[in-house]
Image 1 (cartoon, helix red, strand yellow):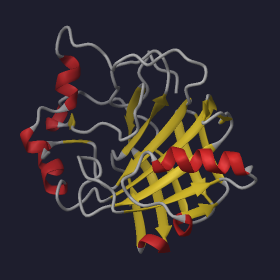
Image 2 (tube, helix red, strand yellow):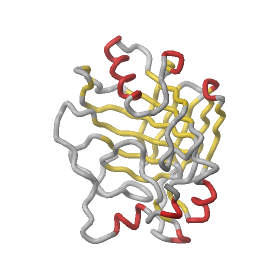
Image 3 (cartoon, rainbow, N blue to C red):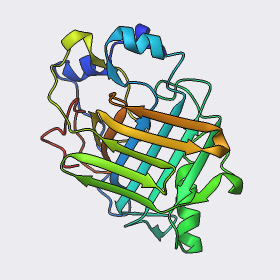
Length: 237
């Protein structure tokens, strides 16, 4: 769906009486935690920028999940992190489906943990994730001083910029997309810098200084309307 043909998500969130995101079940077995999602197009911008990128950018996306509790197929996920890098001919921030993907698992997993994390990622991409597209890497994701930092070895890194206050609608800027992650809350952060190099996808993706980064939570029973710049008061990221 082209952004020029939809009412931006931000305007929808401001309509009176509109409910927040659907509530999720309060079940301790439901996987929940924090996530970061990086796109190769801006997700909060003016219409001229968004329309110029919709068919020529947004072909890459990186999602990272950090589990705080819950289980999958009877396997506890607490303390684990998994990442999924996707490539497509279409805009993955819009309605595009991935044609290729690579999953990144942390070292030291038990066979059951490996199976559970692979099941999690395979359920969330249209691309085929065979063993050749699964890599083991030291995954680090930290949230400090309102910034997110992620690394998977030395070839995949990104850091969010310091969140700045912005005026909704200033210069025509709006929220055009929502995360691919099924989130219970999220904010849009400005990217500090990123470097993503993946030979399996013939990908060298370097970016900085744009609003291409979602940060939020998934799996929580309480949900909130998304924020735009910096964390909303109702969400503890």
